[in-house]
Image (cartoon, rainbow over the protein chains, first blue to last red):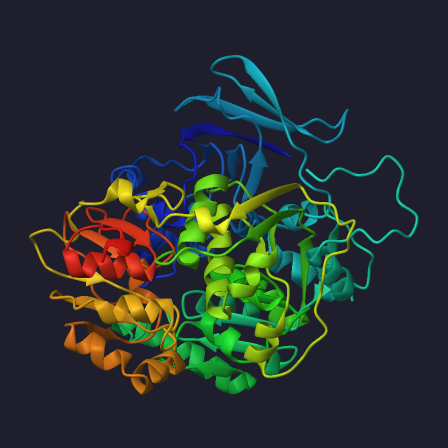
Length: 169
Length: 425
């Protein structure tokens, strides 16, 4: 696994309503529609600046609040492959894994807006993550992705994983 | 984190309630940290999550749900449907449910999570999941109940199973009795104040202690409901006579072992808890109501107040006494949590009181709490609500501010037009 991109930095306790408001999802569930309104409660101009390959970087408890899955699919729909946070809310974490969006746990305090981030797995040790900040030269270690979840993520989410399991039966 | 003994204890039972239930449902002897696949007793979805769940269900190759009688759909977020698009979502849900034989709780029946509790299908020891973060509410009935997303609901509808990481538990001991004018919501907010928004992340809140005996099931629902606002995977109560009376039958309760291992223990002296209020825009930004007293609510622009008692007010109860002494001269919005709550409020005269006080009675459901339907507050408006989230923009306008408090504190604000200590009324 290798992921690289530009850091887009948020703070602590970013709830799912801040990621995408409940009122938008009643207009459409299409990620390509919703992506235009990502994080609008925090900054109405933010969504227009997202580029495919951007990474979301946050503090603790990312994705708290409602379990609504559009808060994951809209992020994925914007071309974002991974979210780095100190901790995730459990419903967001599950939904992310189920949609092939990598929820990566690490110390994010040294990452700044716009930093170039390069993420690999440390296969020499515990499979933990190596998060290299190419802008500052700092490297931090992240928690390994639990082995039970890796197959879902590498399959691209629960749907392909599930279909794969069904055909194997 | 759970502290494991240096050597595994030999046949000394040491499980929490959550560990016991997940052991039973996975047929494995589990401990916190284990990842297990469990059989579910029931699953609930709301109109906020089901349309996506149907998409996932079909994409996964799902044909039949594993057991239609174990699945419940609730049309409670868009109740009534505020737009053509949401009406279409409802049509899709009804069509799918009719094909699959799944029960649909219709517009006006109430909040799905409340209806699950009322249904009698969530019993002590059960594992229940809901595609709604507040599915944790059913933990009040000694069940393991947790919130999931649409994709997990789809997989659960196909297989009848879900994988779960067995949570560590935080033991919350409730001691003593609440002072007059203080309610379960104040206890829940006091807990959020102490644990903060992520203080129980991935963990279970296991309530215990002699203080529980004085809590009605409706009070326990309030505490279990708010456990997710502290990040908890589930909030769970023991079962007692009140549980059995509510369910109309005695069941085998699930109790923790005497040597159960907890991540931490918090003891609350109920008598010392003051009325609490969560300030905008965080559920864990909690102060004593007295500290926020005087803040105008819905100042100037409109005279509306949101008053959403989630629980019934039994005649003669403390709620009822507060209510009868209040004669609000301004409009409130009142959502009963369900049709049966509305029936109770009608039968005992409460609804007449509310209407005479100028309350607007709104369709039972949860939509206005998250701006999904119903009235959107105006710019700069302060809303006081008995709901469970006050994020910026939560009710549909990011220029409004939401305060969360007990029904009594909301009543006090309705009477005075500002945040006020209900005990002063």
